[in-house]
Length: 271
Image 1 (cartoon, rainbow, N blue to C red):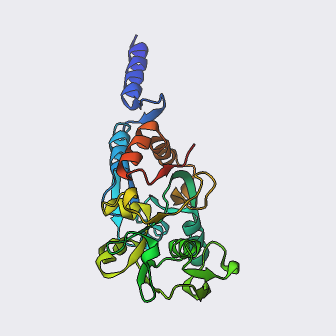
Image 2: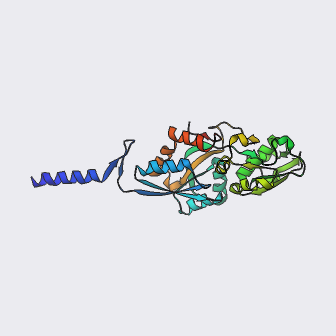
């Protein structure tokens, strides 16, 4: 009889030490702390995911960085556990340059780059001597230069492929001045430049809408190296908690928030 009671007690203890979450998986009741690195100042998407993760015992701390190189460095140095701010090309360049041992575990959105201005309403108004601000990182700066080429302002050495720099410009068809700035600081410079290339996420944080853009980068989601990604240290790529966060991101509920938060400029990339 004592043995039977003891067995029942063990079962009860075991049941109280586990919690069944909504997707049917079983997890330890103890909370797990996860730090995620983001850029910008706030994110409705990640605040929503933070709330959903909390229901499953995941305490997600959102840490915002004001410069693109910082979240990957923080991830590599184990100051954070995961980040979500960059596209494939940017990640590849960072890994190549800094030898980071980090990897993609999920895709989020395609966030096109666009031209914005407070001084002109059409790119046809741009003239010699006008100033354009572009991101100072290689990949997004390269995107901006390719967009300038598409609209007839410059010609670029084809050998530069997807990531040209100012040094790869072979001809100025319009004698514009190109200045390079941290992507997150560009919206604040619009009163001082003729127009600027602004990333979708940065534009959304600044309160811009797609209707305000002079021109927008065109590409097909799912077939583009500029799709944004969720990244972890390679040693953690199979971590169940981190991969659960990817699952929480890739939902219909998040699609709706993306459409609202980005004013339609970002496209979910997991379909």
